[in-house]
Image (cartoon, rainbow, N blue to C red; front, side, top):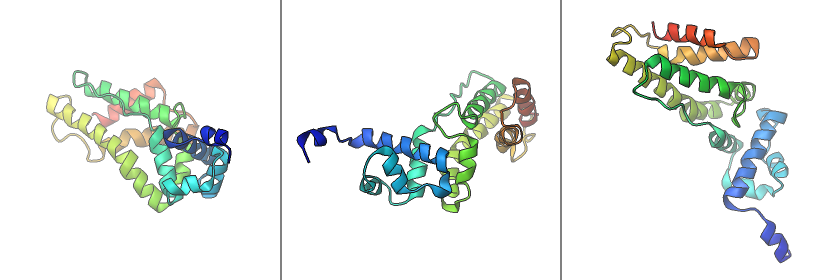
Length: 189
């Protein structure tokens, strides 16, 4: 191996970024069921040993790649109303599902959920923290008197994301601004 080859070899974060990009591209092109560590390595133009040194399973690789591109949660501003904070969270979620970020769109994500191990880890690492943000907004609404104590359904935090996902699944696009308002009206009676 020449010294020029060694100098051009990617390492560290540069290589990891290439592997994440390759993983996401493979997910989009072939789906989770046909994704292989070898395919990711080939797409990233590296050896498969570079992949296996970092991730022992494709579930771990895919989850890390998805985490890597997951946009940050919407900023919650305690000075805004619960409705405004929910709108910010739901708008961000719409952008994610629509594929407006580096995060794979809803069609790719639903393909991951067939793997029980990946689904459980995905829920714990990505879904649950976002539901907790919505739960905190709803708790703030109750404390601030924006909603009557005890008026929120125990599944209130799940309603908005479920309705947004439902819109994407049935229409291929997200809810309109009017629909988002209606969803917030249902979540915050």
